[in-house]
Image 1 (spheres, rainbow, N blue to C red):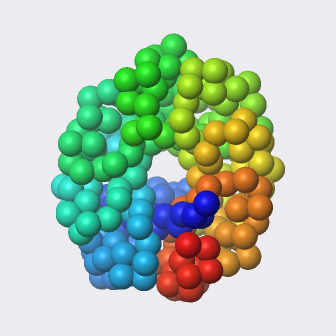
Image 2: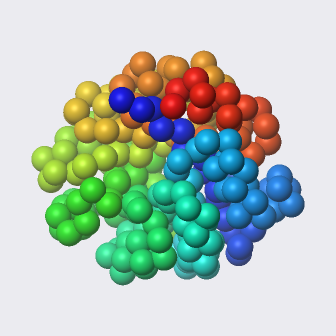
Length: 236
């Protein structure tokens, strides 16, 4: 089975950006152009681009639907993320060309509603698990603090198809993935995509060995710490 490498394109007000402890900061790679960043990843052999609307994630107000549309227009598969908590937004990003939407962790406090969204969107909806240790704690304006294992098990019982597990403290750090979190969610038997801290071929190997079907690489890909072409050749 192919191990997918997804390159993350985080966007705020139409330009490349990064969420930090002090707020959202512009990223100068590729001149701040998310389309150029996505095109470079595609040319390196990447099949999936993970587009994150940081404006919606941090404020609840999305401003980057056109970026989803433009990246999808490059001919790749798009996974749209960033503060997605309602059916309306899921429908919007899918209509813009995303193949899959990631339900934000802020939505998981209402498991009944999350189950309804899973039933409606099926394979086109992945469940975002923003994890800090053994807790799910969403970033952004809507606070969430849920037990990781119990919540994931409830979502599996609701027929969740796939999980995107993000080690929040490691995002942008290049410090390596949280393997325990990946292994815990992969043990449910559902496909898992790992994110947070992944910065090397060795890190990719670790998350694959932990049971993940893929990994999201952001800063390492944009800044050149990871040779994306070599990673695709090694794991594709």
